[in-house]
Length: 499
Ligand code: C2O
Ligand code: CU
Image 1 (cartoon, helix red, strand yellow):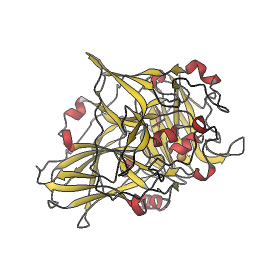
Image 2: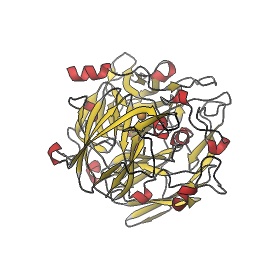
Image 3: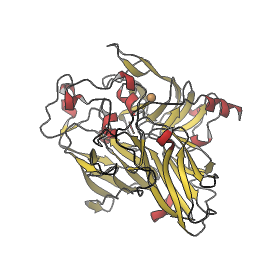
Image 4: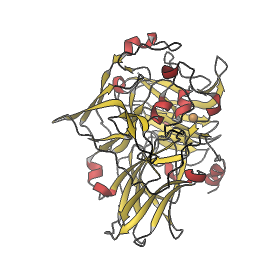
């Protein structure tokens, strides 16, 4: 009640710096919703699947009449979806045919450190010699030329993970150019539930972009490896927003549905844009977004929302019932935080009658219930802007920008820890390797959408929150960081060493 509305009142009007496209914006709801192709393994054995992906430049017609050059996984944006099963080992060989070094990270994966995509574990392109002002010397030992094999045990509950670039200082422009794809994990718990399947289960990767007069992706930060100039510019301190909202790579698409139940697997893959999603029918009525899962998998029971905030890197697993809507009507997925064209995301057209279906009353049964009393350590971590040594603005954690050589948090394998996080502005804070529960927000109870197992928590301006997790799985060097990709590139990242 009171705590909740006080927290909502702190919501900012804008969370980044808007780029305006120089191309005529496409008519909304004309492009059909693309669904990323599912990647076929090159080899499958009794306990695992092996895939290959080439990171390469490709063109796509995103804005009608323009061929936009992209950086892609496998020639498409979003990258092909990998579908995996809990406990089956997934191996992906990534070959880098892009003009820049890359790093592959599986966001939300319980991955051994060697395959987690540490920001200096570069895969160099052919002929790469580095460039002035950005010496590769320190990274030589970690460098794998041309290609690298990443191994994912995926011993984790069913969830929608995503893979994306994670190169130090250049993650934001790389994701912006197209380096992102989905990675689904399935398991028996999910299979046992009567959930919409096949073409009734839709992945929705939402990402905003802006286009220059040639229909190319506009980005204010200049990658020095391409131009020799310095990186991110101060005016874009808040993060980069585009005025075109893409879903699975298409601007404001439309998708035909029937009057049955659909499962929407939503990812906010935007660099910096926060959305507050709302499904509104033609007659003005709100269609509930029934949350059945969070970043790291299914909830214990469904949580219905009229409006659902989603920060960069967060995922929601939603059921939407189009029953009761007249055939021929439409439901717009709106963004209440967006203005102008960015206030829309996509549209569903109710094209025919379908079979009514029930939303299961209970879902997963074994969510970890860590208790504050179990915590071996309680840490305070502040996510705030500040000046770096060279006088430039940076985004800092406890006053420091990212340094691969510094130990920040050292956690003992098996320990339960409580982290008390505080933010100056909006910061979606993400931990690698582990899922966590939200214990409190703004000194009060968590919000309804904080339910379940998360790997990213959206801290709002001036807000504090407590999260609890157990560091199990693997020892090694991991990360935690802000997932506003520009903030991450401007230093808001730190080492998480598990010993
Ligand atoms: Cu989505 Cu450190 O990553
Ligand atoms: Cu941030």
